[in-house]
Amino acid sequence: MITLQLQQLDVPVGQRLLIRNVDWRKFECILEELGESRSARIAYSLGTLEIRMPSPEHEVDKELIGDIVKILLDELEIDCECFGSTTFKQEAMASGIEPDQCFYIQNQAQMRGKRRVNLAADPPPDLAIEVDVTSRTQLAAYAALGVPELWRYEKNQLSIYTLQAGQYQSSVSSPTFPSLPTLDWVTEVLAQSIEMGRSPALRTLRTKIRQMG
Image (cartoon, rainbow, N blue to C red; front, side, top):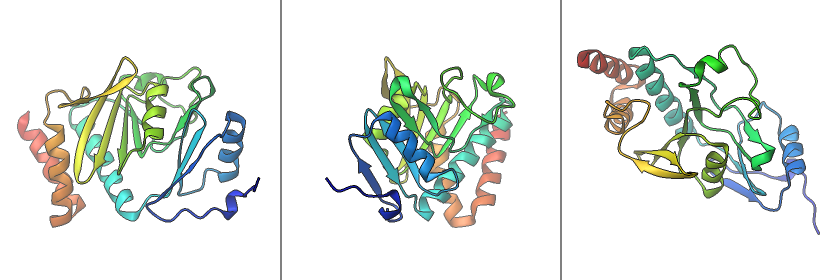
């Protein structure tokens, strides 16, 4: 058997590496070796570890979608706690994930002021965002950890999924923003950001929300 060190692995930008038969102890060791100051993201489910290296396009889109969520919450005066790409993991579920963006909304009061997450005592985020192709490893991890709402942005289109009986089901609207055309607005803002720039596109969204009120 050939043993490789993590330093020997080179994951190209925009690509993923799958490592199978990784037990929980090895997963914890890999997380420690990778450290927190890294650009790579991880997903772990039932012995399969995925390491992915986001592309610049991915980073721009995930930041913009995260900004859209923050504006919607702010304009609707809904309190939240944003935990970004925090590592969420639970040994009992043999799962771990690092979202592109995530938010505590319904459970924001419980997470207020916290700088560390322990899923043995804390709830999972209420809303998570993933940009680009979301693999089976990632979806399985989100489902196992019980994240109730997942947004996937892929091929210039947003899809919203809600967790029902342990499985994700497609939804035409966001449970967090049930009265808003979220799918259309996200697609529109991302298209406008290319044409007019990020800031004008987001300001246009704010104006639209206020006009609805």
